[in-house]
Image (cartoon, rainbow, N blue to C red):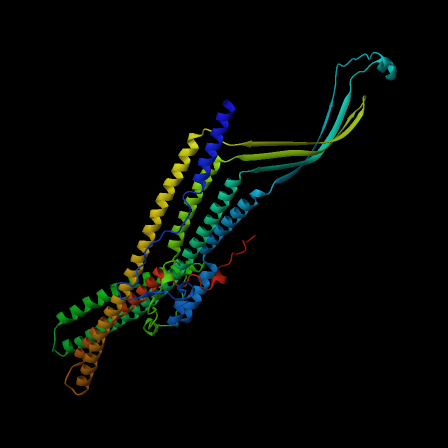
Length: 488
């Protein structure tokens, strides 16, 4: 009865463990995706893969294209992600190779002797040993052989392999997320740099216009047609304009340094040949979105990777309830020479096997519950990530749409200011207006130009954020981010 009870307990534990091993079976959570965005953009089923789209090339700026190539080729954070993939690949191989027995070679030697030995042989042995006795003896020998060893738990090996595979996929998603971030940082930084350099020129133009107004007013003062109060106002204006130059220069320096670090270079200036006004951004955002856009976001892939890992960890925890088998052996030979006795050499082998599984292990049951709790948390983390992705895409497309409206209205203001400046110059040429009026109209135009520049910069920033939300371009130029050779 005792044997039957123990056997029943083993079978019961195995059955419960087997049921738990495959529960829960992994299925990708079903989250209903939107069919359109707030901005009115439709989400359709197409074969377009935005992750392969080199959207920055639509801007037609050779410097930007080269900077992104350099960043994808040299960025240190991308190489860190590559290293993490290499680690995960090695761990997957190690998990796959766990089915292969280990095989070791061993060898050694020994030497020894006896002391205070005095043995008197009896019978026939006394006639065989000259002197009739044995005294101290020395001996030595050597052994060599092979030790095979095999330890396995079928369900543990399978679970560990699945866990390693899920970890590798997670690291690949992290790598793609890093590439996506770097593309966004380089393109966004470059657009900011162009805007800052343009802002510096416009700020200097405001200073020049104010100085010219002050000069003309001084002529009026000398002719007795004006007083110094207006000159003082112009001087204050000039000082305020000049005080804004150092912050702009500082911003340019910081932006250039940040871009240099992204391409793995030392801080320094970046030569820009283009102008922000000449960047082509027409039709840079697609007319509709492919339904695969959300599946290709690295953060969603990472969230699902964490869910797969949590699911695999449940199986790993449950595998402790299945038998573990350990087999070891030895095969080889040994020689020994006893100086005063005999010479000995022999070959031998041994094999030992052991199988074990837990019968009562409350701690292991609690570990399974803990892993199920991790899976529960990872499941709702995935749901939250997907919903947040929907929000992120919608927010950024709406923002881009509104920034386009801001630019369009600001451009109308610019056209009106430019027309007013043109008319004052015509009036001046016909003697119906003063040069002071012309310069004041020019100052107004310069200020509107600054507002238009800000609107254009906001447009470009919105474009970058849209493609970050759409996970655009991270799979393009994938051959540029190969692992580097480490320096000696």
